[in-house]
Length: 392
Image (cartoon, rainbow, N blue to C red; front, side, top):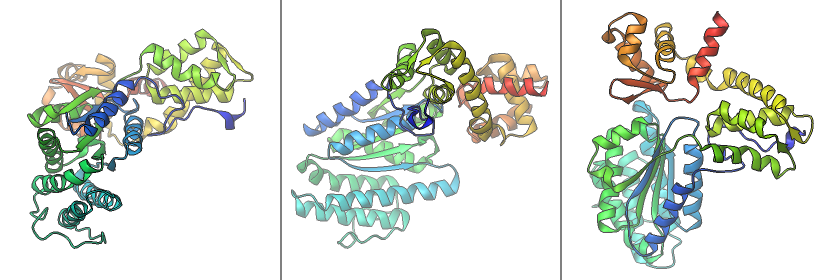
């Protein structure tokens, strides 16, 4: 088969040829758009899940949909640490400023737009020291307190009327939301809460790792203004569709057992489906893909994952951390109790606290629930088993 015709596209944030299994979230945001036209706000949307499930792809799809609906948007990826805090603020400030610039083209409520853009300019200057030429002077009494929650609320309040009069809304899209610093996260949640109370046209749509669920739970009552959706592995039917349909559109057919083998190995995770699909396509000699070719493609796909995808996490770990990761696999597979891990290694649980905390900070594991840890990356347990086999 010609590799240039290969429809499968593994890659972080890369839209697959067939976006399946995410219609609930797409429909929910479409409903947000419809309700906004009636000046009704029922809150934002936050999705969470492991890496490789397509959260970024979904977030980008939702962004495109609201952009087509005429909304003004801000989109950025949060980053951890003090440097990440500064970058997030600058990204938000510049994004809101660009949204204000786009609103300057509105034909309705021109005076209100001008006043709102003045507030936006003040916000950008106060929050991140970003000075942009928006055609108006920064407000000397709005969005300049230096308190993120207060200033963001004043921006949204001043934008609300001109947005409503132009059948639009402001949407802030945040990827890797678990890495937001506490002040900015709280501000976004609080302003979404206020916007829902006041039916302002403002929506926060975010995505993050499973740890985000606990963070939001601790931020109540603000989190109650969000639809919280877990984005997980695809159902078997959707996973098969993600493989069969793109190939079929190019005249290539899979044997049923070949599709089953790929879906079983990928466990329904979109990134792995794309990885195996691409490898199988490149290896198949004709337009019919049988089990033998699928098996060869799976082996090739795993080799590629073991060289590029998993090492990005594994190579950043210490010897003690690798021992902890192997123990998770030995006692639980992908999720294990911390006490069982300690018992398996032969130490008291507190002795493993430094390794556990370091792995959490590196984004390799997360506290799945109280007393349990799990991998943030699907199939990491299989990779670790393969590493152990290589050593043996």
